[in-house]
Length: 265
Image (cartoon, rainbow, N blue to C red):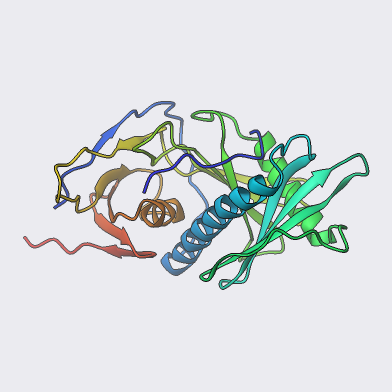
């Protein structure tokens, strides 16, 4: 699966060859989470990304000119079963909810307009957190970053991811992603983590009919284990990822899980 995602915000271990490592940056230690939490976050990123993509298609079919409709972005409120995508707009009276779309395993629901368009205080803080993170996105690999937002599991603030888009069909953006720890009111960046050391991409190979790849192999230097973005990409592109870390360890990421690979002597 390869796609170029929509943007409302401005918007056998062989077979995969890593390419385009660029914009290497000096890497400070990043905020650490345990493997279960990294797995949960990676799955949540995937659900948010997929729900936003599907809901955007539904809204675009109803509202052909999103810019003219005052659309400013979206929020995804996901309980793990149903993801409500709230499309925010400003038509001259401040930020409000323009449209709602629910996405679940049953598919994409209808585009609805809420009777009460006012944002809750938490929704305003959530959107502010996204805007704050975007304003601190320096060293971006390419235009058109996507975002995802979750409550901070260890505090009352937010985690915001700025996710590098694919540069083209068949190219997987392994590097270039960022995670921000944002204050509860959404106004302050408390930590900015570069989740890779470069803008690494992996090009999917062209295979003969009937052939398939066994996964992609990437190196990872900024933490001792794979991260939530590896889980996210593995789910998005429906491929296992074999990740080598700076300690010389090998990990496999697939089906929302991260596990060490035990190599025989």
